[in-house]
Image 1 (cartoon, one colour):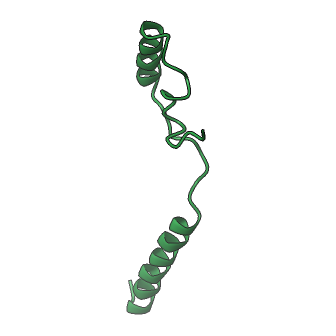
Image 2: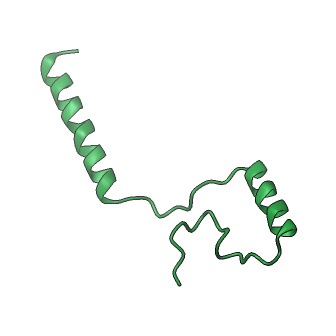
Length: 63
């Protein structure tokens, strides 16, 4: 690989990372099937807890 191509590649990689930080994804965090089952079991065991407090997809719940 020639020198110019390698330099351009590294610079483009840095730019891509910078743009990714500026525009974070709006997708909710993935929760595995086992984790969902565990949360459901906890919720059944403690029905007095609200769904708002135990929702891991929304870390900063609006009150």
